[in-house]
Image (tube, rainbow, N blue to C red; front, side, top):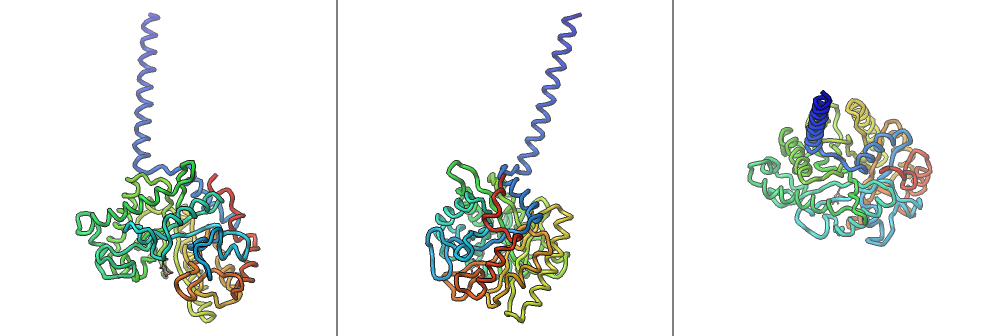
Length: 375
Ligand code: BMA
């Protein structure tokens, strides 16, 4: 009797253990399908959602790389020269990594970008990458918008293999973005941007909605197969009028983590009303979608070229973005290679004093304000 009981107990223990294993196997296989993000990346995603309770992060493209009157100086940034602080977000571009080049399309060295990405992570800031990738059908640049390129990259099409090689180069580079102790640096990845315009080969008139979605999903799946578990995927069309237009080429909730848009202030003072109107409309659209989908939102690119309005920061940009729960706003680069192509002030620039006021507002978050993004 005793033995029988022990045997039954043993059978029960063994079978429940097998049951547990099955469950474990199941959850593992589920996890491998949906990519478990690294702890730091999960924390960054949570931070992006909670930041609007305090304010919004300020970002600048290529911030530590070059600025007005300098190129490649160590520990320099036009924003830091004015405020004493780095922006909370730094944007970089992968364009030409697909070719295995040493420098990107704006003549910035990829090893130097890696060093600056590591520094930015170590000082607690966020990093985002766009990708002005060449056109694989024509070998022209991103702006070579001969219609039909996207179709040729899809599976079983003529440029598919070539394009996968290009994506592989991107993955290989992104995999090198690690700290000295091997921590993978979380990256907000923003491919296939501004696709509601037609200036890029992946834009509106150059492919169908279905082709665009397939392009996004193929990129996402390829990166996932390569084990990329430190990316937050940002969707950033240009300005559109309606939610329907915003969503027309949206690849799906499982492929996108953050909802953004790119739009610029054109036409100096005369353009202020238009810019404000477009910003309000886009921000209303993404605020609503962000709530529905539980995803953070951001102004992924904006600015006014050469900052001809002295109080642009506190009187044009701040009042409009302050009304919406955005996690960050990023202004474009201070080019070293194109005259008057800058979007952040530098010492002595017309809007520099106003930028300091903008900096001092507790709601604008710079590097010193955001020390816990990854914890
Ligand atoms: C554009 C311009 C170009 C640049 C590109 C990628 O908006 O700044 O000069 O090559 O972005 O950074």
